[in-house]
Image (cartoon, rainbow, N blue to C red; front, side, top):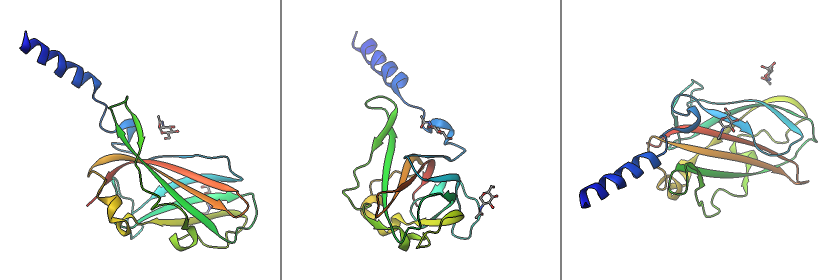
Length: 173
Ligand SMILES: *[C@@H]1O[C@H](CO)[C@@H](O)[C@H](O)[C@H]1NC(C)=O
Ligand SMILES: *[C@@H]1O[C@H](CO)[C@@H](O)[C@H](O)[C@H]1NC(C)=O
């Protein structure tokens, strides 16, 4: 009786278990634009520090994020950068769960993360360098070789925004 109860528990546990890498992130990085914007994003790619393609991506060292976009808004003198992170998990359904970053990744100055300021109008390529190694408290919350969803939100003084979300398999060390 007790044994079959255990079996049922194990069975529920297994069927409830999520795929480890959702949405194809085991082998590919996903990205999508994630707020209404006057800018159109064409591509988002990541690389290692030397510009070479690398997957899984490494969050424990500076990560160059290359964005090709066309700015149909104004010339922006400065942009604030907010970064949101989600972990993937199963306790309340297989979904992305917000990682509490305690505001550490809010109100960063995008211009000092690689965005060329002022940001001109028109088509351009920019490379944001996301460096979580400056935030050891955040690195400590991350598990090695796991999927993470990271959203970069850039906001201008007049409220215009451009946002990109990336889902990727991540190494930490
Ligand atoms: C999966 O990735 C695609 C982009 O490759 C994205 O458009 C879609 O929203 C993602 N699906 C989920 C459930 O996150
Ligand atoms: C952005 O991508 C488009 C389409 O691939 C390309 O024509 C354009 O030259 C790229 N822009 C920059 C600034 O690299």
